[in-house]
Length: 488
Image (cartoon, rainbow, N blue to C red; front, side, top):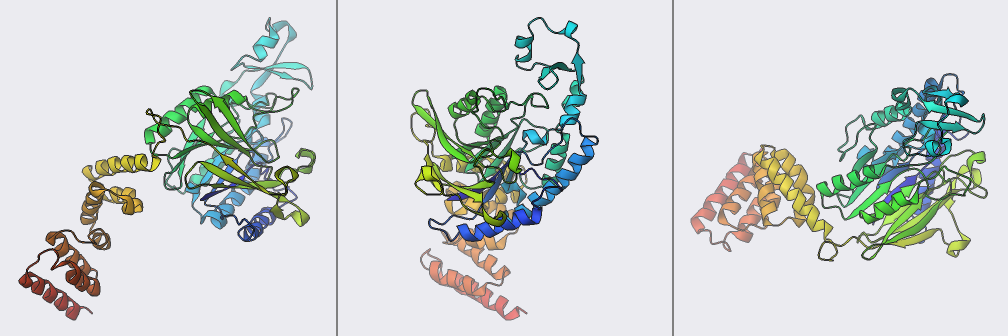
């Protein structure tokens, strides 16, 4: 399995009554419990943080930018330590998206002007709810605003993206990740998982609370992931939930998720609603297609922000090796701000839920062999790197899948090992030895690494079987003995 620590709604602030140290200590202590539970839970291989990194600022905040900078400093320290303690400091295994609390509400309001009643559009209701409308209605004052400074409005998430840049500044190997993008692409589990991390705050500000991901953003993310190729499972991450009561507007249109399903996404992680949930969503196209939606509870929202009966919490998601399902474990904060299993009556007292889906078929209706696709894509890229004079890059691509390489891939990696003078890799690739030439090369590589016992063993095991002459064998044995005698 592959395990993901899914947290959301951190609401970090230096004035929070739960400090970074206390919160991380609670998570670490809970890990010590859940690896021993029945059923036990695999400790995380990756971390997904689905928005609301900080508490944020209201429009009336006097020095909003300074307040946000202070909050994000606290958040950065938290996420960095969490990364060290849960995924060995590997920032490429951490996925970040923004939430509505990450928006500078003071800046968004500064970008707007009040519209006088005489200047109202003729059909105000239609204009306000038009996609990409610049008008906003304030229900508190019953005033109409218009976004007058579009450039300033676009900077309302600058503090989040500065935090984002700071976290990834140390240069981990990422698929396609950059500040300010409506979607970022990540790869996990040695390329088996392709992840689109969406900003669902399109058009969200101090007066407009809905979540939104433009359809063209979803489409482009899918096309870019397909261009990379070889992913066994496509996963999406965003912030907003996809359902809510009639008189609320702070959730996302579920039709956006239906568009993801039809494009092959099978697992979606989000937050925002401050309560954990896991449910399959289905659409009917040529066949029924299913996507599992998983919501994390709030890791550290204030008591007044939690729904009735909800506790602070998080999820551990274990993805099955065949990529056709996942087990979602719910954890909640109980006594003394410590986490434990969240037992649920609706689950018969269990603290986990199993979800399943079918992987998208190919054009012939067969289940795609994602591993074979990924291997083929890596071979094409590795060959290109070798031809371009980058044998080290070729090695980086093929070394992790050496046991799965076809003969052509083995030959590519063998040539890269020769060009980079990687003698240990040469010995590995030339064992078992297939030709007399390979045996000679293997012997010399062993001698150069002072692995004399391995050199002798190779001659005894493969020499006669490959038809090497006695004189040639004696010559190589003598060479080994001479090198061994001269070794310091």
